Length: 470
Image 1 (spheres, rainbow, N blue to C red):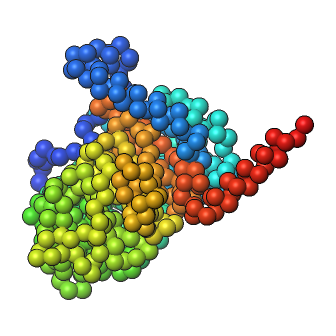
Image 2 (cartoon, rainbow, N blue to C red):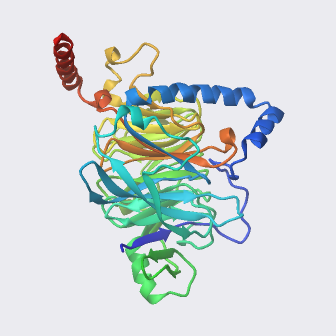
Image 3 (cartoon, helix red, strand yellow):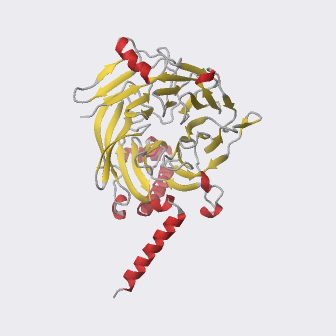
């Protein structure tokens, strides 16, 4: 039996917590169809639901054409975060891999951190006629719960340690904390790709840096004080220790809540943050606790998310409540103190909640939003107008429309780079719960054009040969 370690990292001060701005409202159990229909009539939302259902039906009809594989998994409770864990084993037609989720309940039952085993079907294995034959209200046979950990408070964000993906950190509203924040911290959380460091941001407008090594040291010397939570699960059951871990540094520069943070892919001492003050800030722990560069008006509204390109440490993505994604070059961030992005990607109709670079290609990234869409972009295609339809936003080459409500998180699979897991909070459209989808677009969409044309030409020749036979 393998073990999993979960470091629950959160921050809040005092005993009274103020009302929090949530990206997904407090969930409720899914209502029956009669209650849901009556609720729609009373609220005047029936027309909106019909529009959502019509778009979904249209999307589902295109699944066999657009996707190489897709798994749909109904969630009783919404998950505000999803992350791939380690690959467990490989077989001829599919691989087995860990998947980390959460259950954000209404308080009638405990919130939980869910460790699942996922069967990931390999490329060009699934039959086209099978991948669209799923029941939206059912659980996928490809996703099986392995272990459920009762979590102290809501699980708002999950992040795995790159050096050991069995170690994960969570953001929560629990008073069990890694000390350092003076107020609640909900969403801003990152793990360093080069060192065992954890980065967090919160309502106290600060960015806080910890070392997991400090936590490991403290576990052996101070197991009685309140602090971070380590859960180790295996045959021996759950083990919980609660030492207090002091930060390596606390960084001040934001004027409002810090919504997201990211480490540089090449240095554990460099990181960035974004917040509700519409600012993007770059930091360097070696130069002190003040900003190295502060980008004012990086967007026209609150910034919700940021990601640093793992292939090119000059490129940084940001997503905002102004419905746009912006690409910045750290060598030329501002003009007269105001943000000057390389490009502004416009393809969402609501606030952008998550952005992430593709692990397989340096110019490709994804963005998810409250409009229920997960867009896949390629910056290299922006200047190639022949590659896109006249009405399609520049750089946009795929749009995943399988969710019927806000897509709160998604994660590219590093072990299978074009496979993505995404989760939506379906409270607004279906009366409660959420949807998890694991999907891979057809490789004819993202492969180099010359390769695709050559393959299609071969296929055409094959069809013509078969058609000419008596």
